[in-house]
Length: 261
View 1 (cartoon, rainbow, N blue to C red):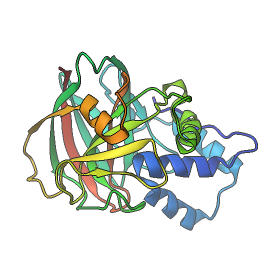
View 2 (cartoon, one colour):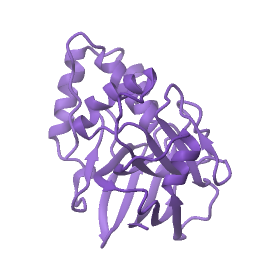
View 3 (spheres, rainbow, N blue to C red):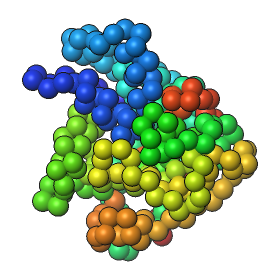
């Protein structure tokens, strides 16, 4: 079930939720719509709304594959994730943004490559992943790494404190997001606004033919070293996200067959 986001005395809970959603998922479009419609909500209203959203069954919670957890947000439409075949997941969304994740423990020195297959039937148009509010993508495969406070920058420490409100002790430190979306060429690396901890790596552009299965194989260890300039630690989280709120897009896609080699 989704992880509830809790208000913290003395902290601007709405800022943290906005910060997390926009920088990790890129879904501040619907949040801004909600603010424009309702005005700035009180912390009490947002806490109640978050608690209610966490308790009401949603499509994103239906028929989840074993071992995966859904993460959604108050006032944001969640994607629907459902297992359609052994190891494969159907993703459906309309102006939605949410993710599935599972904890893993992968020694990238032994098995550095992540392999999977994915297909997009419909998704957002090409967007600019470097611009907040214009960074929708049909699918992203996210690999999370342990948080190391001794090595983290001030920005990474701040972001991790915020991420803990969303994922608790499962909150990763750095992450690599392998993206189907944008108008950039394969291999392009984008740093999201206001974060040192996360990077987008484009694998498929939004103009890829729809309805076609594509196999992928990425060397996560090599990408981590190339992007962050350090040896990759263990991979501790695998996530699937889809984001169509900014462009008010309908997403229908499928993904699965994850293996390490």
